[in-house]
Length: 446
Image (cartoon, rainbow, N blue to C red; front, side, top):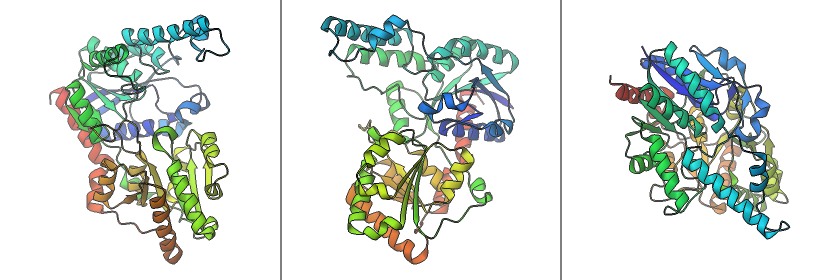
């Protein structure tokens, strides 16, 4: 059996959507001839990371892992002098003197150029590079590694893997869950920073034997931009786990829609959903006692509450903090339907660059999906192909879809679900891990 080194600074016992995905892949890779070895970092507790990454602390999931996990010491982000931090923090000319503001502006620009030129990605884990490289070399001495797999975000994982691949001469596959750091913040393509960033990314990805990505649009972008072979490996769902777990029946006194996981208001525009709820409740006030919309672990609870302030939608929306994986599964199965927000940022000729993970979780739970807003692209096509849900372009369509579901639920106690099992079978975890293993086979020369 061959060995693959999986690199991610987040891993069990901390848990979020990225860790869930990696742990699911790692558990299944041995079925396809690959034994995982994980390189990660120590964690003192979930509370330290939860504000920015939505992590929970779940040691029972780590105990179930049947492969080695190696850890470095916990290291914070890049070290910067207090003087540079103080000067760079001044982001407005008033009330600071003009010269001091200009000095801060120059310091911030110099810092960005320094990161680009020296290869420091703008994420908070770039300080992990040195200890991860040292531990990676030691891990390679203990295990006959045949390939390296790193997962982004955060982007530092790719930086660690690129340098290890160069040093050890092992084929490397970078796996992209999104392109944050490669496209954010947006830069003019012909600006000095834009040219330097693209040049640095090309240099970083040069040792990559191939790439993996989670959406067709991202596959096209990476292949066109970096000239690499790119394999589509989706999130996938585990039908056995969904069927084996005892599901609590959704309550019959109200229709429950749930979104469990992060929400990014600037990109995903939840206000479209809120506008639709307002419209529905104005037209059908009685729906306020029959509808509940849950947001669990959004990582922007205060912002969502502020957006709901004074709206009719506030009557039916419930906002809860991050929960562990088991509770999230229970909440999903207690729901009649699932919400999925599409990402409207970074739409260019490649289309929408990412699928909402919620879509695949709903596939596993056999719950109908409401995607907001309609992306007119891959998400709409996916829902149409599988029959597992519908999209809504604007508030009027949101109100219409929810009105139809409320009417059906009031008669039958259920929301109509039209998922096509034969098509959905293409999106199981085993099918996706098989594709990932095939990619690893190809780069390792099997």
